[in-house]
Image 1 (cartoon, rainbow, N blue to C red):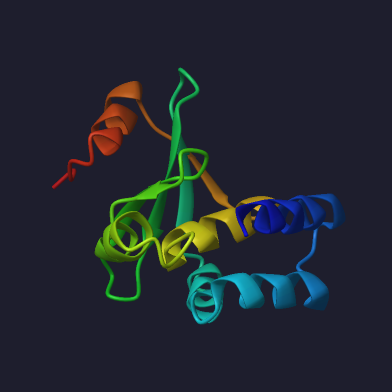
Image 2 (cartoon, rainbow, N blue to C red):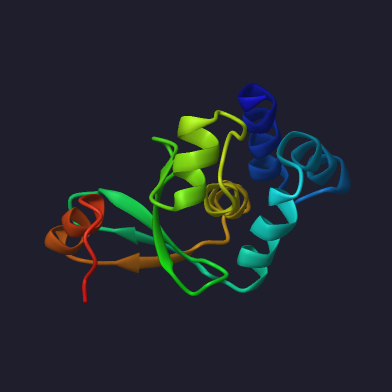
Length: 130
């Protein structure tokens, strides 16, 4: 299933759009998470934060307004759903936050933000900035 999704994300990157056929494949693999991920994208709730050294993370504002840190290439999100459904149960490939990150990245439609190395390192340690 991961290979199928990667092929779909590659197709989206190449075409620059989320076609009906690509969307159908994502729905077939990810089910209800797809609608939730598209809602996150529609709400423009994703930022890619990059440091001067080139490290980057994604921040996603969830439906409950919590901010989650996602690592796209490492396939990680610090939400409870990722921990339960992806890591512990293995019932999903992604949580809705990571799926949204993958789709919006493929569409090249992610808000880009530059921050200091210290800030990005803090995010990578999953500390809050409050």
